Picture 1 (cartoon, rainbow, N blue to C red):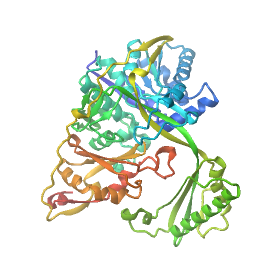
Picture 2: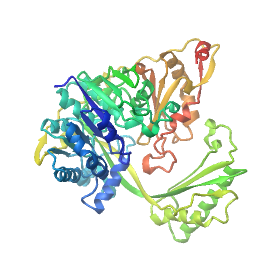
Picture 3: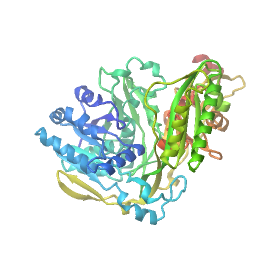
Length: 598
């Protein structure tokens, strides 16, 4: 057993820069390197690739960009590599890794975790009548499914490490599982060590998005703007207790401070007291985040509860086609010109659809970026002399979606004055991929390990399930007398980061000082949320606010706010990445003493 381990977070998505691995090997002094490549959109892309070429369907650049240039150094340092790069074809990814190990004549054992892929059971799952866990919608047409994958946890990864694996490749596991698997192996945690499992999972959550913990997407971007090119990737120094320190390699760019780590903790977590993972239900509400040195932040007091007796399953399915493009208008009345152009494009495209006896568009979208007047109560001063028109549609047929693109091109000489566009080929329709999430009993899954060619069955830990009754909500903070209040923009008081949970927007806000939290909580009420996000929200949808006293934060979960989310959305921001930025200039009344201290 170890007292502490060092884990480097080297990838946050498929397509990230390849700079992390050599950086962490050079100066990170790490025991493990973990790589997260997957998202729901990624799974559908990999599924399409596997359908056309059975030997594909995984993150190929894990082999070509991570292992091939660095494997000799990885082996020399004795670093273990853990990744979900297997996508929808972990066996093929494992075979490619084994071939590279043999080619380089290295003594490394490759393990593959199998059992998450349920696509072959699509007809049985459809017959079982599973409904979407969020919307209640019925199971999709099995013939339209692209992928069906359960989110596995860290214990299969730990078992592979116990069996001597040097490289562990999974299919769909939760993003934090690779970090948690290393902790379980190193510290001998059991399925009942809930607080430790929650701490290891939080460490994985902090580093799973790479440099988002070291200054990327940070509210105080001006502190890191000159070092982004050389930003350091995160390292978690995890103790047997589950507490950990977040840092980065010495001499690298970026910054690790309370703000960067706090923002990442609240990133896309939903209910912070019931962050549900396969191995544990995490409670982040009392987590403390403390600066202990330059670029060293201590994270402690994570609590855990028994996990549910189900796995979350995410399926992706095809639902027609979408098409869209962007162009700019410059000069007087730029926004009005853009909208006139969009109206004309839709009129012409619908005329073409009628001529070919095709259905109307399922959905249309027009966003005039740079013209705040479209944002209702959240509007700022309008009248920009340069705007970008984003215009898009959905249609059941590829040709129907393409009709809009053709008519946009055909309007080039009939447009209002001031049209400009970056030269290049015309955009093309692309498939709409929707997400369908449901819960399946753990007893219905079989997880298998292939370690160095030897296959064994992984025994899934049994649980009585998670009960929401174990959650005790913290008291809401009270504000001081505001008779002589002074309003200041939220950004003066807090950091913020946002993202998506399917079709829900998740906005995390962290007070820069504990004294500010009561004022922030009071200000960001029903009126404030609908003022800033009402134009995004579906009619009748609502939101929840959750309090995190440990880090002086709150998490806002806004339902049906992303137009379907992911590639099912026609929005310019389908994953809610900019929602915190929309909120950060909201006026917050504070005491005169606080206002004068800022």
